[in-house]
Picture 1 (cartoon, rainbow, N blue to C red):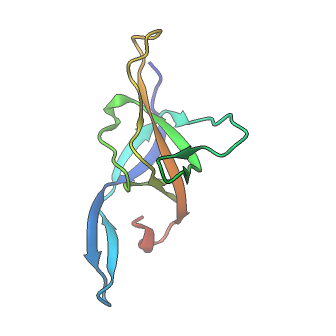
Picture 2: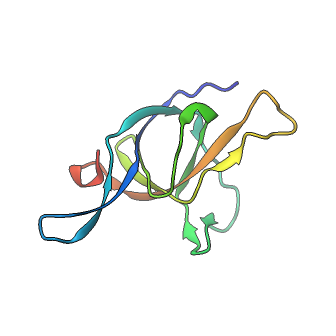
Picture 3: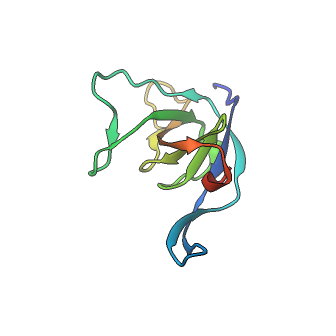
Length: 120
């Protein structure tokens, strides 16, 4: 089994709230420190896209099943860089060749870096 040794701050999406001006804004819950195995490797000549809206994926992370529940719109902060989760994680826990190893691949889209406005 591969060790999860890289740090990530997982902020679960909590819905929409109103800002000081009465505008609807997305909100996230408190961050949870977690670990992931590695970054995924995209080998295509075209950008990786997911969903029917064809959202471009900037990077992916590989996690163990113990990482916990991840949903679209959640946020991940890695080394001060903020990403939105795109779609549901890709499930590779039913590997027919390696019954001792299963993982999830979480697709991420770049949002920004640091700062209170990103929930970090």
